[in-house]
Length: 151
Image (cartoon, rainbow, N blue to C red; front, side, top):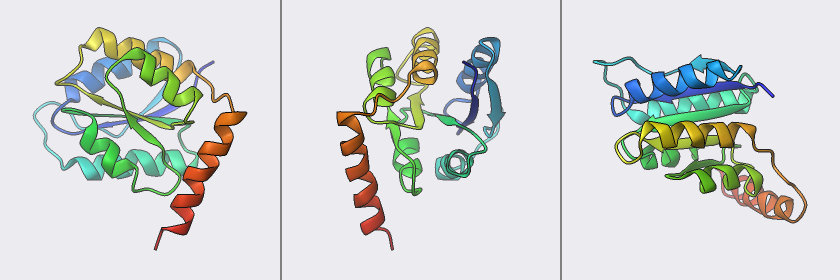
């Protein structure tokens, strides 16, 4: 099933982002490119916010963010109400974060994983569906914490 995916990156991963974008489009997905191109620089929180905004507004169904490790992007994206961003470094976690945590943004580190692993990760992330059931209660608790502690 094809999806609309917002993608962004900082200067730690424009080539990585471009290759993943082409891969996802080759699988039939639509990609909204919020990233930069090689040779450009940007502060990662700006791109994390841009992609997260597209996800929470419904313009994109999912998001993918790339920086050096994926950690900074996940920290910044998770500040946006309604976002559940996960920094992952292998395929199993990328799939399970959708199935169990209903993550809506996958954060990747261009300096810590290879592009072929990243391709498998984004494919599993995009194709996985949230199971709900016992996992819904936990996602609801995350949402409750977010709502009660947002100023």
